[in-house]
Structure formats: structure tokens, C-alpha cells
Image (tube, rainbow, N blue to C red; front, top):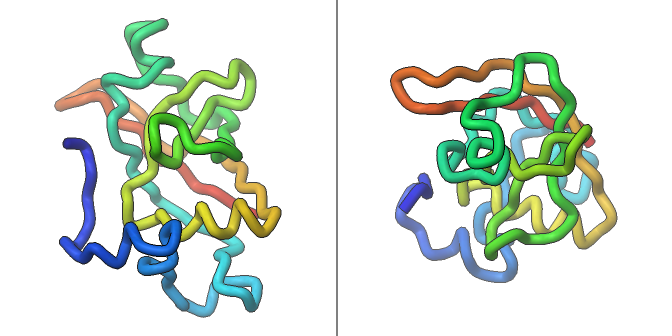
Length: 125
């Protein structure tokens, strides 16, 4: 299925409000300022992988799509706007942050093809 989570349906309720995390790294309204070391899901079936038969390089700029793509929060490569993977459902609360006008961008900090295609990103508001 490509989703990780803790099996709690609250992650899906209220547009993702069930998964809000207050870790002290937020802007006061529950939206994080930085999210680091996010291992993306569905990389091998992403638009980018299908078009290039590979993954983008470390250091490339990415952004969180402002719209759901196939009902998921997706990360796109800034230069081409191709989807490179989906956020794990534990980050569904970011959908509410996007609706509040937050924009997230960052960089690829790790990527590779073995043992399966993977991409790890850092995102910042």
C-alpha cells in the first residue's frame, strides 16, 4: 500500500488533524517550521522515477505540493514539478497547514536505488 502509520484512524480525520504533533518546533498554531529526515513513499512508482528510471540527486530542491495528488501529500522536484514521492500518512496534518497558507520547501538529503529506490528530504516552512 505504501503507507506507514501507527494504525490510528485519527490520522485521516479532519483533513489530517488527528496526526498533529506538538514537538515544540512549530509556529504556535501546530504547523512545524522544519521537518527533517522524511523518507518518502512510493518513490519507485512516482512520476519522476517513471520518466527517468532513477531518482534525483542529493542537494536538489524540492517542495511540498500545494494540492493533494491522488489523495496524498506529494513532494515535487522544484525544477520540473515532477512528483518524486509521497509523504507518509503520519504527516497528513500538513494538509491543514497548507490550507492555512504554509508553504514547505527543502532539499533531498539522501537518495539511491538499492535495495529499493528511496529519497529522504528535509522540508522547511
